[in-house]
Image 1 (cartoon, rainbow, N blue to C red):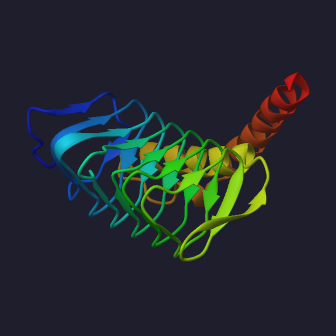
Image 2: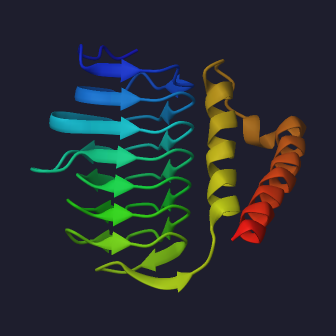
Length: 196
């Protein structure tokens, strides 16, 4: 396990790979996971990784000059992303090799396509699909179920990796749990939509 400094708080994270590096003021919340070669640095401001959020292999999370990096719950920050001084809401999926710059604010239930670049100060509303360089909203739809399922699968994977089991997604137990989770999340989304 990496040695973290006194300003790093880890609140019952599910899995932290030994190569993960965390420096400065950072909080890793319950159920979160840090995968191989992730780096978090917060020499000023703060980094927060929300509950059940996964930070995948080779991600870099840093603070901006005036802004911390706050990532909500049930998010997937996928391989090779750079997150720099921005705020990401709950239930978001940030695609492979995406860069999100200082002062960006991404709403809840958003998907940012792989290889997107969000320039400084970009604001993305809830329930958006974002693509491009610079990244722009290309469609509006509620991505709650899709994003939560991805985070759920990574949570199960993190539980398995914590026990040195590396084939969770190939198991029948995982397939059965996924079906149950799809039904649960679909019902939750339908209830929320009926309220609104």
